[in-house]
Image 1 (tube, one colour):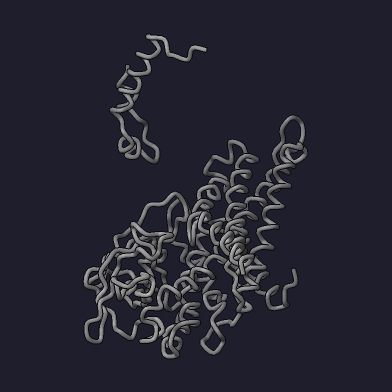
Image 2: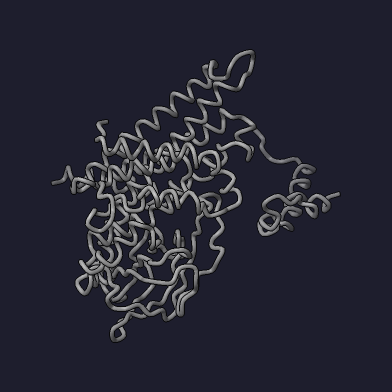
Length: 45
Length: 390
């Protein structure tokens, strides 16, 4: 079986990981208890 | 289970108080993180703060087994109330067992009436289960000890008038526990006295709200030498004294687990008889019945283990094995029942409008506090291995 990730999918994964790294745990904790993550949603759009 | 007439009477009174004054209001106070002043006042009027304090010191003179029954009822309403009660209970137990006669006369009557609130302080930022690695020191200076160090997770830390404090009087002692001493530290409630800072509003928590859990930062705080628990003879014996406090505390936490497991079961049964799905009450579906059966069995087994441990400890026998089993099983039962209660409530269980979310947030503390459940399992296994080796 070949479990390697095809090139395009790997690029998407890397891009998503890079995006998420810009929003560490501190960002999410600061939103608690109920603020919407405006900046995170705006970033990829 | 055979209860005496006195036990039945006091449990019935507490049950009525919980049903009438606590269950309908607890979630609202909990969500606001508000101290339950009027509930505590009723508990004081009922004499609950003096449950195990001997009558000659102004208490009710009842045993640990009766106290456990009371804590089960109280926790069925709201675990936080048992945390407030336990501060006084654990201090009273340690002073009764290990204090000097003068200390008993000075503190017990005021603990019984709740004129004096108490807290228990052993844990530090870097040391929970590993008690021997605490760093807080108490250095003798004439007729006083000077306390330096930082304590953590002190329930009732701000409102208490005495702190049962464990510190190192001989930091070089080997083994470390022989250099530890217990103190009955008197302080003015709701203030930062010289040498002691209590950051408020305290530590933020997932649950167990309504009562403060604080840090205590000692920096040159002075306490009289007479505040050593047990007097001069108590120097170097603090570890043993605090472990005895923790052991009765374990029975108390087991009882909290029973109460919480029962509350989750009660709510689940009630909701199963109200909610309809697929043309009938959900309680008529076997999937829900299976959960109810497991919840009820857990709650009942937890109750029996806890009563057994409390009775054995109350009789003066060694009960670390039984207390460990009760604490471990009853608190896991609380956690499992809380989640099953939420499952049975479906989406409403996740809503703040219903109680399961509170049970779900309160239960994990019981797994962690008063000796984590991992520590309990080690105690159980080591005790059994010791027995078979002798």
